[in-house]
Amino acid sequence: MAIGSSMIRSENALNAPIAFAQSSATSKAAPNQASNKKPIAAQPKVIAKPITLFWADILEQEPNPQVVTDANLRKSIQATGFPWRVKDKASGIEMLLVPQGKFEMGMSPGDSEALANEKPAHLVTISKPFYLGRTEVTQGQWVKIMKDNPSNFKVQNPREAMVAILMKQGMTKEAALSMTASASIKIDALPVEKVSWEDCQLFCATSGLVLPTEAQWEYACRAGVSAPCYGEVDDIAWNESNSNGETSHVAQKEANPLGFYDMIGNLWEWTSDVYVPGFYTICKDGVIDPRATAMKSTPEAIRYVVRGSSWGRNASTCRATVRAGIVGTEQNRFFGFRVARDPLQQESQRNN
Image 1 (cartoon, rainbow, N blue to C red):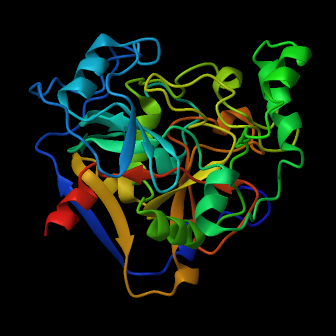
Image 2 (cartoon, helix red, strand yellow):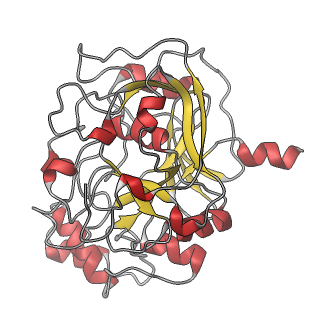
């Protein structure tokens, strides 16, 4: 698979020795043919007392049933004891909780578009809940942490940008102009792009956040849906046919069943995993919290997994399982990212 003229290297280009950080599960995966939507996780024991987070402001403790419409999925979120919707204090990024559970990773049942690196499908266990950015990291959030904006596509007139967003949502121009008249309104609409994997590491080191693993990314993207997409492509994803040749404001397409926007389309998203040809074959008997890492190589020789496709790719690539390997120093207007967080990571570090 290629992204532009030189963004994807052949599988033979990766010569670095690889260490596989993954554990075997007890049973082999069985493809889910029964239903397109099913609970994302088995029901854990309910925790009655909510858990507080020192690093985040709580926006909503309980999952909104208009967003998370599956009752079993809401129960899984509630049972963790963590608040559903939070705002990271350091970065201002809104994050949603993803509960622990199991899912079929890789080629979706009956997907004729699946490529070799999406096979075989295999059972993955996500052993702990985690938070994930509700949208791709925006330019405003990036600037807050990094103090610059590397993006190719920038909002030149913030007020006009907000007016355009409100009008797309059905508001009249007069009402939109009135609402955005206050000088205190902050516009933060476009995702940051032209960021390399290494750039993302600097952002994460400064903010205390991390890139999701590839497995976490797909688990959150699928949100209990076994089909290649969680909705009709043009309803959920900015792609070559509808993007007008540029990135689009975050959260303008339909969200997935967990409430995440633009998981598919708009920008390819960096993950923390090294791209390893044949890694899915290694995982075929089932794995727990899989992650591929590399050792003893220069950064230029290592490729990292990007997910979700972008505004510059055709609709056939806008699927939950599409994956590619990109050199970690690559900066391009097709690449962005979203962040993740272990809910208790810094609490544990602070108490030691």
